[in-house]
Amino acid sequence: MPEIVERHQLAGLDAQDRGFNRVVELDRNGGAFRAVLRYETVQIAAEGCATEAEAMRELVRRLHDHGYAQLRSQLSFRGAVYCGSREPWIEYPDPERPAGVSGGLVARLLGWFRRRKEH
Image 1 (cartoon, rainbow, N blue to C red):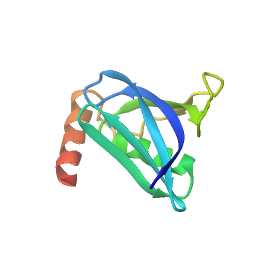
Image 2 (image 1 turned 90 degrees about the vertical axis):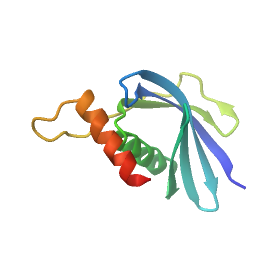
Image 3 (image 1 turned 180 degrees about the horizontal axis):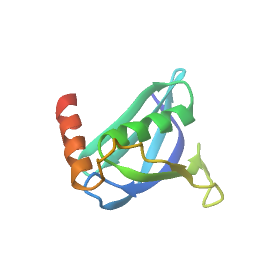
Image 4 (image 1 turned 60 degrees about the vertical axis):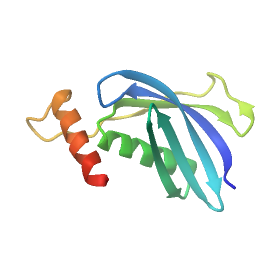
């Protein structure tokens, strides 16, 4: 059974440009780490990562692929220990966009096409 090793707050803009702030759970099953975000009816996970940091970076990459932007996270629990606001926020820069491609509607459409291709 997976063991939750950390919880992070993840904030940013979703694919519809709405602000959000949700908990990401990082668990360990054997030697691999997994980061899971549950947001509305969607669950996005990064699995099989070597470290907690790698799992968070992979989760953010997947969220960027789905049109999420301006993402940042803050460690809130390490095991059962509450970290409060003592930990710094980590900013995840948005990926570079091809010349002529802006955010908003175009990013949402590209994210929609990517999601359709994954299913």
